[in-house]
Length: 114
Image (cartoon, rainbow, N blue to C red; front, side, top):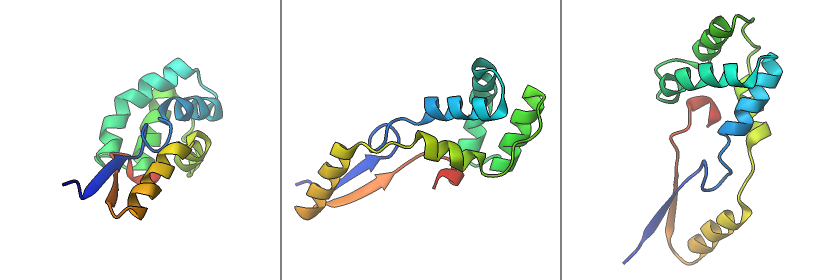
């Protein structure tokens, strides 16, 4: 018997935010999108697992792109820009809870997104 159901956030409960986040950040940093994506993809694995902090992430991006380090808060602003709920999925989650299922949400998102 199913007693609990677990949902992921990115791509399940919300639209996958990576592409919009990349576009937002490259625009704010005034760099070419493909240059930003290259640096972003190289540094994201360490950022995602907490091996480097948000500050270190942006310092490395700035160094690689030869720009000034962005002001604090760019990550949060990019998330707000990219965040789009999948309304139907949230309706399913609420319905499951109302019907007695335990519902969990998991994510492999980076710490500043929590």
